[in-house]
Image (cartoon, rainbow, N blue to C red; front, side, top):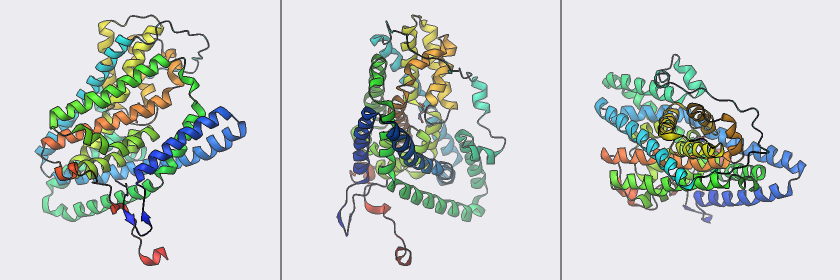
Length: 443
Ligand code: ASP
């Protein structure tokens, strides 16, 4: 990825990942200080105004890349895989694995939350629950029917990723079926894919500033005091997310692909930082893709299919939040969920994660559906609303790690991982991303 440790003529440079991590740390410090000062002018002009603008520009720039990048890379992926049977195998394997990891994630969350029992004896006074409305629960049939777009242009324009993926795969298959005549088109798509990756590199250069602004704004607005009343919820949720991130997912990787999970997690760090800063799996697609291909060594064709697919249908961290939040709120209201309740939560969370795109805060909307289904008061969401942004950041990092793990398992099964890249600690961290402008452009 755009993680330049290259030594340029100006002497050794700090890697981009390092810069982003420093920016994140600085963002937390500055945010907490601003939150403590709590000055009206600073809050409106600096935090909401300036930091808000920089953060928004950065996230917008990442989102700007998503649809064209997914289109060209997916098209390249489908035509590159070349064989429709292999495509079907990669598609169905990743679909099953994505659903399995989500179901596993929420089961672990429910078990842990039941053992810890957060929310017992919670004091509801002072919680304002006005303005919270339930979203309607989707039916299984509608979730699948909505995959087929009526108008592909509209799907692209509104960023309906599942529809974009469907249309692009169909297009890719048609291109393949036309055989030799498609060669110039495939070459043009490959070229456009390279162009998109170059734009990704350019956007990444702004990453330290964007990340700083996003983190400083979040901490300045939210502070740390918000956590005290819902500490039990936060601790249980973070514990469940960490178990999934450091035990369940790596365990699956080792078991199903034999790849070294420690190496893998190290290589995914840049994508995790982006997911954490933007709280959007969709906006993180370009970085997840780069990490998977250039650092982990996953074949581009497989990654360009599985990564956007996962960002849309796979949300392990979000499912974990649903599980912990449901148990927490059931305890707050003193309601017994019962076995059927638990099974409903698992089914709903898996279903909701297929149909919803990876954008900030969508997990809360999904939670309203889950609560409605098990008969818990939707207003309960008000209790956890304050801490949700930060929880969203952590769960999004888990979401994209799940995407990359399934992608790597599928790729390994197909013999599509370059082990030399995987075993090279410096892979993807060389100066390939340096901008090479023609001389006249520099002058
Ligand atoms: N922000 C999450 C994502 O993009 C979804 C959520 O949990 O709200 O993956």
